[in-house]
Length: 143
Image (tube, rainbow, N blue to C red; front, side, top):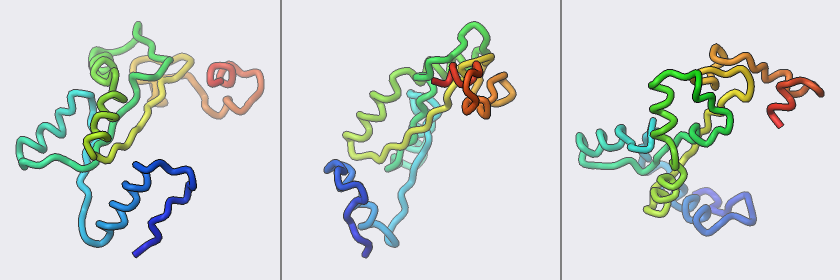
C-alpha cells in the first residue's frame, strides 16, 4: 500500500480522507465519473435512469464565471450553456458535501475580439503568445 500522507502538509481533513479512499480502492475498484455539460446534469440523470446508479466522480464546467463573455455576439446554444452553468460552484460544493469526488474545468472566454464560444481559437483574435510581451493589448487584457 502506498503512503497515505498528502504531499501538502496543510492538506484539509477532506483532502486526507479522499487520498485515503483512493489508496483504499487502488487495484480493487473503479471510480466511475461523468463530466456534466450544464448544471441540470442531464448526463448523470441519464446514467441513473438507465443503470440505477450514480457516478462517484462529477466534473463541472466553470465557463459561466468568465468575466469576458460577449453576450452581444453569440449563438443561442452558447447562451444556453452559459445560463445553465451559472452557480455551478454551489452544485459542485453540494455534491462534494454528499461524498462525491468533484473536478472542475474552466473554459476561459477571450478578453479580446471574442465571439460566441471564444475559448476556441477560431472564435477569437486573442493571441496568447502576446500575453508575455510588455505593452501588448493581450497582456493588458490578461492581467
